[in-house]
Image (tube, rainbow, N blue to C red):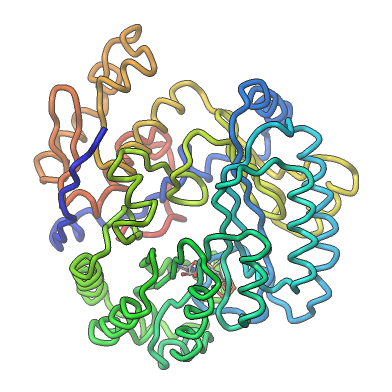
Length: 465
Ligand SMILES: C[S@@+](CC[C@H](N)C(=O)[O-])C[C@H]1O[C@@H](n2cnc3c(N)ncnc32)[C@H](O)[C@@H]1O
Ligand code: SF4
């Protein structure tokens, strides 16, 4: 199937009207639905079903450590310069990998692996090799598997990058956030432009297949003018993918963000101007809008997958790999199987204790109902393809037993009509199409199908623009 994708359209009135706290829908139900009451028997059963079906695997490995803290950071990190802390972490994570490998059929192909953090390149080369070897001993990688890693450019050198490539990593991502020195200083993350261009040169020389960089808008001292310069420099750097994240300012959850001078944060109107400029500059300079905060060159596999209707989304964000079971190693990692999600312990102590006692280090989880699975498909289709075929959904889930799509989602009809009246979607008899203006509000459109949302106080989510 080939989908023609109209360009994205910036509409500040709609963006203001629909600005509200919403989940990012890297999963449905969202991670907030995971509870400690979860019974791990369900997790083991879901692994067994995947073994029986030989469902492909996607692996995630979390390295939580960073040497210094960036004041904007919302990730799950452990900040320390005591590098020896990584040794026991690797010991326990490798035990956890073995524990999972005992449950998972070796013949299931691994088509994707990602190391994230924190900062995976906090590890020494010896530690990287040790972790890599252990994972490879226990899992069966496809020859063309996507193997990616997040790195911090401040602790990189040429040897490190070449080592990663030789080991088998073929995709890489690094954080820039902003090129402006005043912004960098205010967020405690100084990385001169020469350092970033040098890192990119090494990555290209080593032959990585795809390079992603992260930017954040909404940081202190950013203006339309300064961020335009950051966008120009990023285009010059020429990555295959660019993420332009909206700064999630949640000081009540991340106290380190209190170190940012609040009065230096750009006002909402300036943030909207910055977003508009970033979208226009990136799309005019050859990047395709993938969705949410992501842009990719038209020949990057994410962009190709989107044009071919093959884009998917999981806890790691957009992906080309459909229907894999995601298995998370290390603290805070989430595993996402067909009908069960679990999250590992967040604290090192709890994670170590569980692994030591040969228990699965699960902190919380959720088992999905059939209704969750149907709604997940709706939300993922909208987020990845910007359209939804009612016919396909009816056929896939035999909705005719419960009435057709319109009957199944009768209580959502009023909300959908409002979105249509505002020009975010078009509703046709057999499909829903997101308009170019609706693309930037895709979380609001997806949220109509979120059965949990209405029952919940949404205080802890970041804003949708
Ligand atoms: C785990 S970090 C990337 C790897 C490495 N630690 C680094 O910083 O270069 C993932 C990305 O999350 C984004 N990020 C972190 N905190 C954020 C926040 N509060 N709001 C928006 N984006 C954030 C940053 O763009 C960052 O590059
Ligand atoms: S942004 Fe990256 S380097 Fe900075 S504190 Fe967060 S995880 Fe660590």
